[in-house]
Figure 1: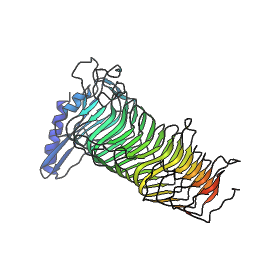
Figure 2: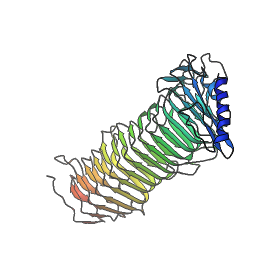
Figure 3: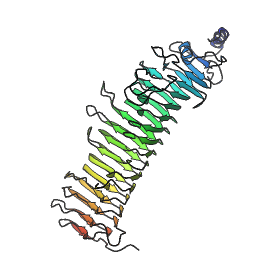
Figure 4: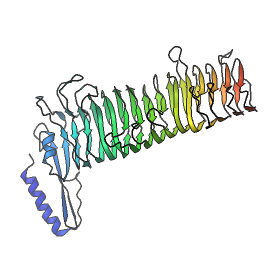
Length: 485
């Protein structure tokens, strides 16, 4: 319990300050409370400590939060220790309440440890609860420097560990470890100005979900071993509210059960917009974009197995997509696949294909795109079938530019129309090379479909056991067919 001496000292200080100063700010880091005096208003900031050994103001976290009067600012410092919220499994289960203007700060990851239950619950168990929870509209909540163990099994049938269900603004979750979660490690709805930084999430169904809102940063987190998605900006379904202006940067995602970064709006709702995924590392995880506009996928590294970039129209057309400077090592059918997108640029990516499953048609870039498509400056090596193709789609009436790419050691055709109408295409200044002797590839470039009148020029091609270029209805000139030194 907070001491009466502390509260009395605050009131005496308040009277003194009101009589002598118009504006006063005392940092919460330097005082048990601070007072703001401006135009006659006074605001206290309550600071309490929680310690299991009785050395703090409280021995349990919920009591410390409840001690902060409604509407006031509070800072709760939690000492090192293992805090069990529900040691007796007595319903209704205790949760840490998230409230406006409250900061809850531990002594460090794996030093301040908060558990919902002492023992891990099996998937589908009836004993389950969020660890940090709110259904109210909150503003200015922060959670920092501690470990949360919900102690459930990832099955997406239970609560999220951090579960903020109202309208949420100015939320900071930083340096928090979250494990053994039935739903999402962090779930925030109807958000404005959210920062999730430096957190470690493992054994959850989903890592981070931001549902309906704008202005968020998901930065420098590690997310491992989920059954569902890693990072999922998703539609808030009750109002069909999409997500905009989110930066997903420098995260590490590994062994993700569904999608590593899933930028997909509900097919019933408006598209997500202005979301950038940059500098992330994905291992056995992929990036998906659907029903989203103005999306940038930049400087990510995708490694091993199922890692790839998927742009599709399954939930609604993806429009204005930039895929640039990514490094992809993948055994998937496509390292980069665009299926029914619109106005896309694939620029300066490095793609290394690993052997696919038996009898799989594999390509580096497969791009079926409406309107404009630019594939430029990419390095593609070792695809089992094609370097660049169009996935067997017949889009037509679009504008395609494929230039300055290097395609090496492909199994069949370097650039291929899949025998379908693709409309106009400019194919220039590409290097297409088969290092095998004799060639394993059949063609360097092939477009035999009668409506495809391409311009194929200035390419350097040393590939194709049948023919370097097969394009009977195209303009073909000033290409070089010589071995590489």
